[in-house]
Length: 77
Length: 505
Image (cartoon, rainbow over all chains, first blue to last red; front, side, top):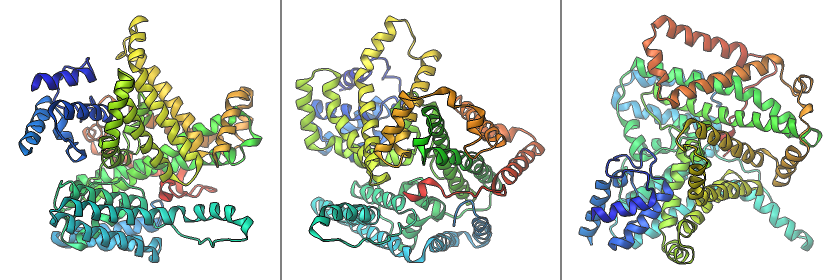
């Protein structure tokens, strides 16, 4: 799962080392346009339904946070 | 009651005194009474509209927290939002719409009556704030406030009701209802912030406005260079007026022990137009992002459109079309919110187009920079970006300041095709309502703001730096600022502290 998420992130911005960043949103590394693209890709890849209510900084600040969100949504089914 | 009026100071002193005298558990009641008193001074009848929003939002909030059925919740949310935004739109645009309808109806001999509707103070700001609360409840972010009086305080909190910042319930409400012991540091920081705000407003904005109005209310008789000069002053005016007003609001709240969110982050250092809008009126931008842009972009029609455009245009363009469309709608909404006028719509389109364009050309720009060996992270490129962003913002300001879209285009035409640089000379400038001393004050004031901004961009905390100086220096600084404000501000003949621009929205 992590590899897939990293690949999606790398397509957004190849210059960022996403494994090291823990403040992707708070440091403005990902802007709102990136978030929308990211959510679209995550929804497609993992068959999820990420909605506006999930778009909180704490869900997208790091790769770990993103993976946790995916797992949470998959568990909710 | 204007934030620059002596009545406000008296009101604030009494409020502070009572607030810090009563037991902590009653402090929020003092704030509620003060907030409604403050509102009543603006117009006692207008409290009706404030109450209408408070009551509808309060009960809808309770139901949204209680109900489990998603469809029911959705309908309730839609109905209450429609009601409150409908009220805002009605009060804001009724006469504009009637004037338009009457134009159409005139040949048939009909005429609808127009009313002199007074816009309730801060209606946009408390409506946005209440709507955000409801949407958060719908999304299950937190539980509804059950105490109606505490909720009423969240909607009406007096310093911020005039022009924001638009706060979030989970950040503001707990602070409003918590007990606050008198804290001299908070009091001092609050006063410092207020003084900084008054400095921006009274020393710069209230001077710049003289040139702006003299030239732009009668722009046909001025050459392009003088118009450009006045629009530049308008940029100064609107920044110092709005951010100064917010500083006063935040300073006031801080004296009460309440921290309101920042609304400006040195926008004149922005490196792109998108960056500018992330630094300007931040609380409105965040509101639009969370409650309009995100839901729109993630809505099914946009999602489907995205799939189609990605097939049609592989690469960045295909991905960006639906998101750009959503951001267009956001800018359009912000434009319409400023006023029912074509110039605001044009302003929205101008910003939306440029921001989308910047994203599309980003990869090409990167290649170009690599070829000419310019480091995109380097100082040189950053300065170029800051200058070009300020230029784009400057052009955008023609739209917001001009009386109409037509006037804005004519002003732009004059600036670009009939510039006549020689028209800017000391004789002409001194004919615009300001003296040499006034210009000097505007210049020095702007340089101070720029200097402080530069230090803050570098990560310096002005507050902490001041803290490290001895108390004599700190007091001297406060006294000098007060002296400057009194001598060159409030009591200077011929100048009356004007209303804040954003109060009208």
